Image 1 (cartoon, rainbow, N blue to C red):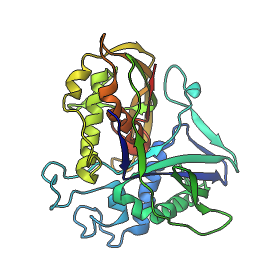
Image 2: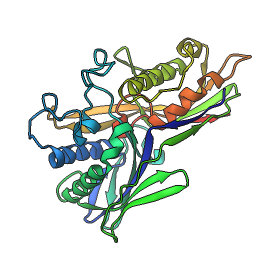
Image 3: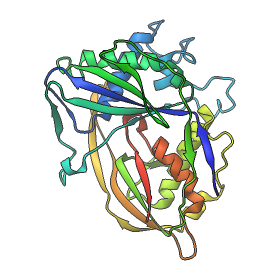
Image 4: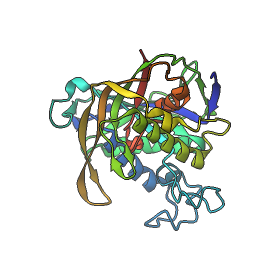
Length: 328
């Protein structure tokens, strides 16, 4: 089945530069997500209400649209989803060579002038508020990441377009551009192969029926992708005009793990809401899946391609669940 789709999705890239010596986790997703959310709320909240749920602007304000997306009462899926999934993922890299056999990745030291680069993929209406997000990133860097004395500055913000990056903000220019956000194009891929490698570049934390799943069987991956994509469709019309085969979850049970080179990686984050350190983790590494004789992975091609864009599992707004599919 061939397709050539347009999705209401745009990717951005930000380059921060350390102004003071700093020490951050080697995987800074939880740090960035927490700092950005705190800063954005402080900058844009007009009512100063302690919670967004009773606020009259909760369906239009830049903060809840990104971090606490509520389902409007007139939304068809209101009864099923009181809150929608966050319409963004952080795009980060994790250097596996830095990870010891036991424990989490070590801290990463920055000296003044060192860059910190991360991406953000935005879905739907959230893209309209990009100037607010750029301003919040500027302020969170200036306030200090991981502590008030670990200051950074925003050197560049870019929008990733089909023909290359478009500069939104350059430190030397001192002003912000806000061009229309182009949709992402998704072209069909050839998965006429019996073996498929799935690389989990950042921790994949899959929860099915409220249970953490590990190791990740192929039917676990398919169920988690269907669950996430259906929730994104309910909130943002992601799958409008896109039909996924209805029997994918059942068909996936026939696929086996031929080789599993993943490991469970635990990370820590501090929850300001619960006032405590929390341990979070997921699977990283590569799994090779094999289909039964006479079958291939073509029925799953679209689902897997969408997973590469939107990640899989929980904590995707911290950069978790970034996956890549490699037909063997």
